Image (cartoon, rainbow, N blue to C red):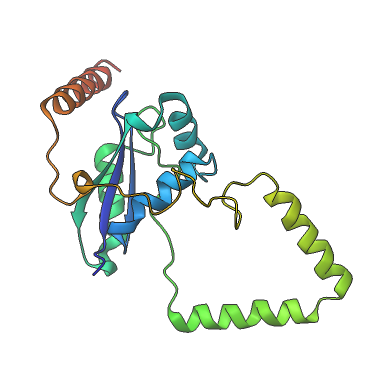
Length: 189
């Protein structure tokens, strides 16, 4: 059973944090890591840091489990706590404000999109398909391109990413130093 909750992506080199929420904690890391590995993450600030510091400099941590109806509230709490909207301290680029659609709304939206597609002329459909083909050119996530890729989604992340993982002494001391430097910087600013 998938649990919902709040997770962190921590840059161990500089202490910056990305705070996120999901209703599928077990699988959320794979989604982020796949996009980051393939240079396709929508958060360019996080993607740039990943490209600069490398995968080994990032850790995925489950901050807390919570009910699905509390996700946005708790995500915003941790974003405020870690001040992740400040580019000097974190990687979040907007407040926690996602809209969760009901199955009924998703179904209506799907029908509306299908109806719009059916009203299009063949020329318009072909133009749209060509734009998608051009956009997908060179995309490692496109169908058939990722088979056998050691960095593909589904890679075993091991037990160290399970809920309750303990930081090593080295990781703790490095983060304590980063946070102490950050507090000193805030106090002198």
